[in-house]
Structure formats: structure tokens, C-alpha cells
Length: 311
Image 1 (cartoon, rainbow, N blue to C red):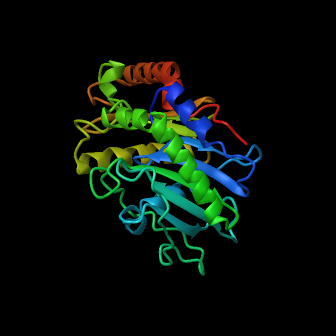
Image 2 (cartoon, rainbow, N blue to C red):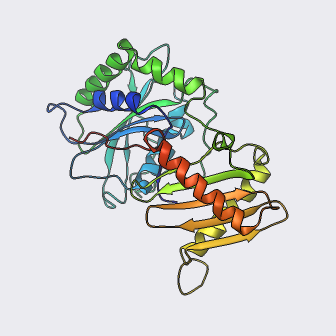
């Protein structure tokens, strides 16, 4: 849906992390600083005049979760990456440090892999790279600090990142994040909404350009069922955005299969896709969608990254 997927968390903790990541004036040419947990954005710090396109962020996520980076024994990597929405004809440098229990304060052995990307062609990493299981390998927490720079000052950036990691480690911020992550406070179930017949949903805040969705649970906890519901979401998305051959997009689209009923709905503030029991009529689907929108509005400070610092 061309949007950021942020980690659900308490806004006070997110703010504390973000304020620590704001660079000082000595660190030049920094474009973006991103803290990522389990392939979702915790916070993103950027220059006042630069935003990051979701497509570029997805390239960064795919890059750091490629096996050569994610499974590397080195605690940090320094690699070139092309962000086509930022500059389609050039490269920036990415400093990637996974935060681990055993070496969170020892990030000095940065590696310089030469084969992770292809600078000659400018091709981004393959989007088909599967997300590693955060329980496997060295990076069991899945938490990574990423610093995107337009320059080549590795030593300066590495030193600054070390300082940041030391600070969030010593003041308990990293432990608070790890605790929230491991206790599943950063995820949520559709059952929390207590909406009869609701099985799953995807909500996009159009103003924030961010999405939120609950865990895929029964009946979508198996790969085949998850693929089916994702395909149905895609069909509705294409219909709403006039990608299915029609002359104009639709504001609301509803369909029913033997397994579920699905509704897509686009308004000025949001775009929403809901999956429900096939026994529910369309009127009940509309009511459920309204209830989801109200719940997201109430929880938006936890679900979305808002008012992140700029520099």
C-alpha cells in the first residue's frame, strides 16, 4: 500500500528513543536515522526538508534483512544502496548495526561487504527476500539502527552510532523496548477490538502514510489462508484505485467468498480493508469498518509514528 508499517508502542517510549537519535551538528551529510524492530519502524529521524518515500524505506528494510547482512557475524555493516525516489542515478551509504544483548555497546567491527548490492546496475535488493525469523540467528531481537548518509564519513558515523547505542543501553531505553517487544506489547489481536465477525483488517492513515494491522490469527494463521486473504485485499485495492481496467476508482468495494466477506473503503483520512465472516451482510461490514476506524483513531498515538523530531 506504499506506506510505512510502524511498531505499536507507548508514545512516551517512542519519543524518548527518537530524541536520543537526533544527530548533533558534527555529524554531516546524514539523511535518515531509522530504528527498526522486526521489520517495522520504531522511529525515523530526517532533515526538516527531506521526507522518505515508502518505496525507498522498503528497499532499506529488504537490504538489512538480506541474509548477507542479517546473518553476518559482524555487529555492523557499511554498504552502498540506491534509493531511487531520493536519487535514481546515485548511491548513498547505509550504516547498519543490529542491537544484540551481548554486544550492544561494542559496535566497532564494521564490515564492508562488496556483494550485497550491485552498484554498477543500481539494482535494489530482491523484493522476494523473505523476512528472517527474529528468533533465529544472532539478531534474535530484530532491532537495528540504520543511518543513511550522503557522504563517506564511516568513522564519524560509527562513533556517533556507538554513542547512541551506549546511551539507550545505559539509561534503560533499549531494555524497555526489548521488554515491550518480547512481551508482545508491540503486537495486537483483532480480538482486542471486540467487533463481532471481524477477522482481520489493514488500515492506512493517508495523512501519516502509515499502515497498521493486527496479527494474522485463525483462520489466517496458515500460509495458504494468509495468501488467500492477502490476494483478496489486493483485488479490492486494485478496484478502489482503478487498476482493474475500469474508468474510475471506487470509494467502496464489497465482495463475498465461501470463506469470508471482504470490504475495501477509501475516505479522505483513511483507506481500510476488512475481512469478516461470510455470514455477515454488507450492512454489518460497513458497521464493522466504522468501528475499526473509531478504534484506530483512539489508539493512533500507539499505532503510528507522529511528530518525530527533525533536524
